[in-house]
Image 1 (cartoon, rainbow, N blue to C red):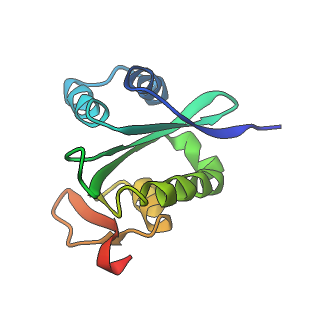
Image 2: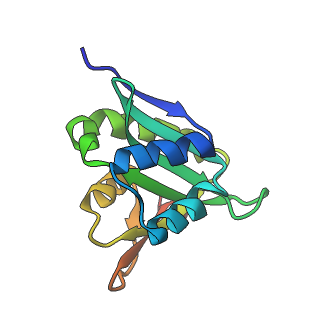
Image 3: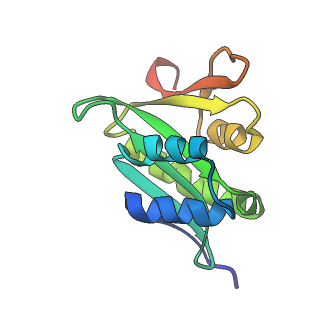
Length: 143
């Protein structure tokens, strides 16, 4: 029987687990991007399948008193096999987070279909895309 779970995590554990999911050394740019996301993150989660990490996400509020927060996600290919379970877990978590942060926003790589699909399931509205990214919002006046 496969055990799927989502757990809270700290920054040090998250960095290591994302490195493990990535399966190879991160480039300098990937390392800087990861540090920029994980470092200021107030809330971190890791998705596990049989104890093996398959995805991670976090929420970064710009200030302690902010009612908005920035969402980031790292999902490895293994999450696809269990996507509906992870979506349900993340829907519950985002619903609870919206009590503190009514508006959750961010940008997504325009080519990251896995993340765009996950964001749609979370109720995201998307803005106009640039060559590389598309902005999104969960909550606010439209949600």
